[in-house]
Each structure stands twice: as C-alpha cells, then as structure tokens.
Length: 295
Image 1 (cartoon, one colour):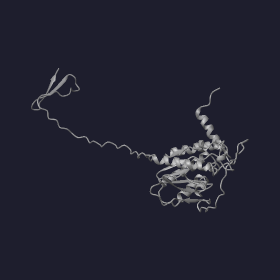
Image 2 (spheres, rainbow, N blue to C red):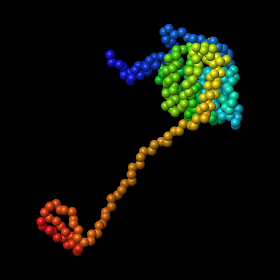
Image 3 (cartoon, rainbow, N blue to C red):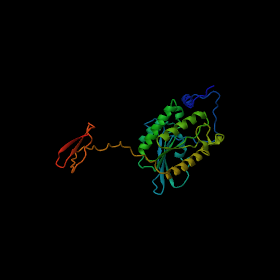
Image 4 (spheres, rainbow, N blue to C red):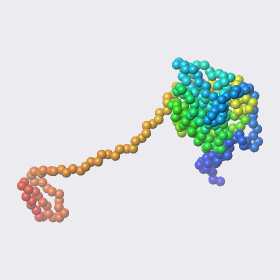
C-alpha cells in the first residue's frame, strides 16, 4: 500500500487544526475538564475601556534611572500582578503592565495602540493571548490577528519579545499546542523571539491552577509566572537588537560607451588584408601609390 506523501500529511494536519479551534466551545468527545486546586483572589473592579468595552488597566512604575523599564502587555494572567496580589522579583528591573482581561490578539492590539505611555520601555513583553482559542474561528485567523498585534507593538517600540501563554487544564491540549505553534511561526516571520514556557507548568501539579483550570493560582502558579517574566525579560535585554538588512537597490547599468573613430598613419610598405580575390595582392608604396601584383 503506497505511503502518503509529506505534503499530504501536512495538509491533513492543517485541516484538523482548523476544525479544532475554537476549542473551548466544542470539547472533544470523552474529554473531561480538569480543575485546579489552588486559590485565586477575588477580582477588583477595573475601568472599562472605551476602545474594546473590556476591563483595562495601565500601571506604570515610577522612574528609576538605575533600573531598566520592562512593559508587559497581556490579558487576565497579569491581573494578580497589577493588583499586587503577587509581586515581581526584586532586582535591576522595573515593571509596567497593560492588562486587558478576556482580550484577544485584536483587542490587545487596539488597547496597545491607544495606550498613553509617556516613556519608552527598554523592552516590551507580549504575553501570548490564549483567549484566541475561543475568540477566532480557526488557527489561520488566530495567526493573522497575532501578526497584527506584533506589528503594532514593533511600530511603537524597537525591542519586543513574546512569552508563551500558560497551559489550560480545563481545555484540550492539542488545540493549545496548535495555537502555540502558530504563534511561534508568526513571531519568527516578524523576527520576534518567542519564549516557550509550557513545559514549566507540569499538568499533574494541579495546585498551580485555580479552581477554574484556566487562571494560575496566587500562591504557586502566579509566582512561577512572575519569575519566568523576570527571567526572560532580563535575558532578552542582554541580547542585541535584531538587525534589519538594508533594502537592496537594483543593480546599476554600466555607462554607455560611445564609439569613436581612430586615424592610423602608416609609414613604409605594409600588407593590407588579403582581398576577396585570392589571386591578387595590393601593396601600398611610400607615396601612397598602389601596386596590384598578379600571382
């Protein structure tokens, strides 16, 4: 029996990816959502954004000349950090947050472009939007929306990287991995570093998640995420900016060389090129006289 080609296998995989998203609305037959065992704070009321209609908050640190400024842009995973239920590790960095709970990539893009941030961050970290698991009709649409978010961030700030979203216990794992791979592909296309962290959250450690199986717990899960945010931000600050190659100009055509006439003065007797008649030869004398010699 002939084996399926690699191209055929990839095409079938992409078709499967399209049917798997959105995952949280159409759970696979036999899948049972898993709940976490950790605790999570009761959310505080936030202002509602006029741009997206979602809760939104921008929290910037005071200026500190001896610290580098990192800005995090993301969804509800940042909420515990903004409200100070969980603290970022101390050190040589200061942190600001632009958090929009429930936002998809397109909504994060809208908030990012409209945010009034008076200082230029030394680096911006985008928390990959896991809400696109349900906000977009398929993997390709999620990739397009994420591409718009990356382009918007790079249009405002020179140094940007992406941190992977934490896994969800209450959702199927396969669509999460497909979305993660699509985000990595889009980030690579834009020359942006994508830092994978899913393996840092063991799925059998249910205490890392709160009861809903989506958000991380305040006592274990969020402190781990805070350490990852600090670690990857510091590492990316040490790396140089990506070098954009200069545009290639079309090759210039060589200058046109105009032909010019050359006058040759001949002294003495010289032989001219053999005439068409091979039995005759012409010799030019000293005074320009011509002799035709027969053979």
